[in-house]
Image (tube, rainbow, N blue to C red):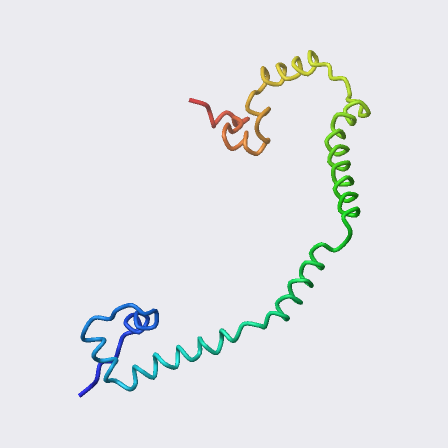
Length: 150
């Protein structure tokens, strides 16, 4: 005869203090294996938690953390904030200043548009695609006349 022990879900309910169904609660109270599973888990949790440090240790650690966090005097923090603010101002003004120093070449837009119109009027497909693509889409007619366009 095999004994059915508590499932993991039922054991989880027992560990967190939830009420078990009546048959599971009766089994837990009478089964040494299931009680040992529950007790060993609770002992592991208690061992991992440990004890809280005494008040003197807590105060010492708190003071060390605060001194490490503050790091320096109030004056050095003010200087760091002012330096950061100055850097933000300079970086935000760079694009405005840079536009005056960089000379952009003058473009003759009429000449560019005329050239584009010439290319498109000759062969619009070759203006947008490479020569290989043009040959694949529109093959050149055969010179000997056998391949004719329909």
